[in-house]
Amino acid sequence: MPNPLRDLFFGTVAPKKELVEALTPRRTFHDVILPASTRRALDHALSQIKKHDLIFHHWGLGERHSTGRGLAFNFAGPPGTGKTICAEAIANALGKKLLVVRYSEVESLWAGETGKNVSAVFRAASENDAVLFFDEADAIASRRFSSITQGYQREANAVVNVLLKELEEFDGVVIFATNLAANFDPAFERRIRTHILFEMPGAPERAEIWKVQLHARKTPLADDVNFEELGQKFAASGGDIKNAVLKAAQMATAEPGADENKQIHQRHFEIGMQEVMAAKKVMEQSLFEGDGSAMPAGLNGYFDHFVRAQEGQGEQLEELTRRIGETEQTTRALPGIVERFDDAARAAQNQLRADLTSQIGELSGQLSVIAQEAGNAARENAALRETLAAQLNEHQTKLDDLFTRLQNEREVQTASASQWKTQILIAWSVGGAGLVAALAALAMALQG
Image (cartoon, rainbow, N blue to C red):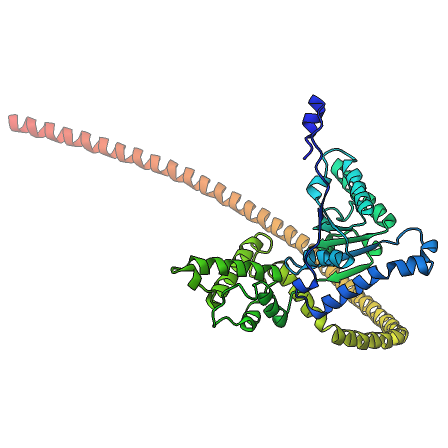
């Protein structure tokens, strides 16, 4: 792979690897088992290729259409459904080489180089008259960025533009294979002649796929092997069945005993498929989390769900047609419904206006009564305050008079008490003097 840093600093150029891998196709449509609808679509695509010269040269359409004469096919479906084998089978049927694009070599770190490599790939296919095959094409034909803020977005858009231009001018066969067709840029829909959906095989196809994985004469099978039962039991793709067969063969060879006596039993196939399905669940865990109620489990489950949904398409179309008729009848009745609705709306509006006016009048009357009562209460409160003030003044006067009277009486009582005490002292003094005189007279008499 080119080393841009080495080229930049040392001026060296690494040997350029091939952008495509040229294969001589060996597998045919007999090597792949497909659902009937997919096989019919492939036969139709092959017929388009074989009649290409008749249409554009003998019928003269090439003189009217200088571009867009190439045959581009989109093989879309889950992994392991036979897209790569069918691309090789088409090249084999045409007697041409198959050029498999190596996207890791086509993509370059240098701006503009990837677009040049894409042009070189188409040029190589034209020079070799080969079928050009883009595996996992959504990596290079993805949707263009509508808002460009980074350099890599501008480069990715430029690559898609180059690819579209080359498709428009290419006069050969191009096959795109993808597991994620929804990631394709919408502009490819017009430039791709036929889109073929590779569906998951049904039970009869799965039984045949189990058989073709084994050699008809050399593979030792036990008597208990039942391919129909395997096809019914395991809803798997051809690629998964291939891996299960290889695992079963490995388990059979690992059992004890002589190699010439070893055989592949039914249990080996079942255990091999169980291991393959368990590995798929581990790989899908990072993509689809939870209980699986919102989305089918993995890409295979998604396409199974898509196929099942297509089976009821006819009934859904009839139901849709019926609903469209009902919708048309409703649409025709809409003017009358709208008119009646307008009348009802106007009547309701008038009634609402009358009710609001009445309620506002009632509220105004209530407010007037409340204001009047508040005024009366204010006047009554003022009169009550004046009465209370007069009564308080009157009581204060009475209290002052009472206090004065009590003070005077106290002073009179105090004066009376002092006079009484003086009279008692005088009486005691007079009495004491008389007693002393009597005692003196007594003493004198005794002495005499």
